[in-house]
Structures are given as structure tokens and as C-alpha cells.
Image (cartoon, rainbow, N blue to C red; front, side):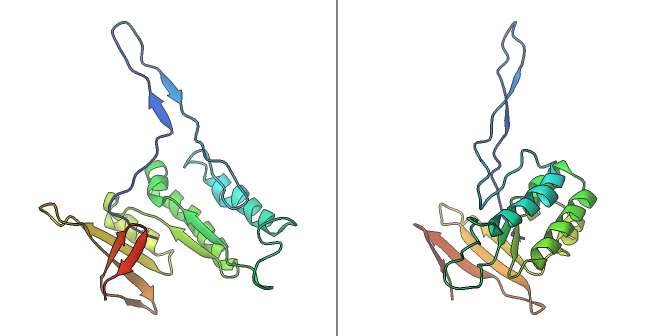
Length: 188
């Protein structure tokens, strides 16, 4: 789970303009994302059954079929670990109740843990939810990476830091990092 300071969300629908004598109309904008062998998409954050069951199972199964990305792994007999990213848990929580989202994530996190070397990344904007919601979701995670960013003020650079919670039961101190021109560096 990676809490972030601010997140952009792409709108799936747009409202047409209203003028005198005209009615307001809505039209749905098609999402340009398409399923591939390595990525699966759902049409709605309410489609938890498809995300957690059908599409997830089919994706893992297809990866191992002949011609799939795992059928002939590069670099030896052991396949690379499967990575799953739920982007974003924040969106799920906006559309479904905490209990429903928790049950869905419980199923997904357990499925990922059963995959040999599987890694799950679950993104959550912690500033959008209360402490109860955050701690409920954190219960499902082995490790949490918290990220914070503060404006340097007066035109200064944005200061970014992260810390890791849960490695061997410990929390690291905040670590300052920089992202510039495609390069990520850490302050020592």
C-alpha cells in the first residue's frame, strides 16, 4: 500500500454543456485501456467480482498457457514473480463501503500471497480517509510504504520523504528522496 499526497483520477464520464433552451446531456467517454496478456482492466470500481475472481484467475491462468508470458521464462527454469497493482484502493473506497472493500482486498491479498514470489501493490491516498479506514486496510498488508511531500515554500523545491513500516516488525526513519529527470536518488 502506498499512500500518496495527491493523486489524479481519470474521469470516465463527462457532462455536456447547458445553455438557454438546451438540456444538459451526458455522454460516456470510452476508456482507452484494453486488456493485454500482462494487464487486465475493469470498467467500473464496483465490478469487484470481476476484479477479484474472474479476471484475476483468468490472467494468472493465461500467463502459464503455451505462448503466455510465463510459458518460457527468460533466464532459467524459475518464472519471474507475478506483480499485482490495485490502483487505487482510494477509488474502491469511494464507490464501495469499507467492509466490502476489505473483503475484496482480503481475497486478493491471499491469492497474491499463494503465488510463488507474488507481490501486491495497493495504492491508497491516506489523506482522503479517516484513521479507522486506514488502519483497517493496513491490517491486510505485510509492509506499508508511507510517502509524504511538503512544499518548500517561497518557490523552493518540494521535499519528499518515505518510510517503510513492517519489515521485521520495525519502522524506518523518514528517508528523503529526489526525483529529477527520470532519476530517483535517496539522501543518505
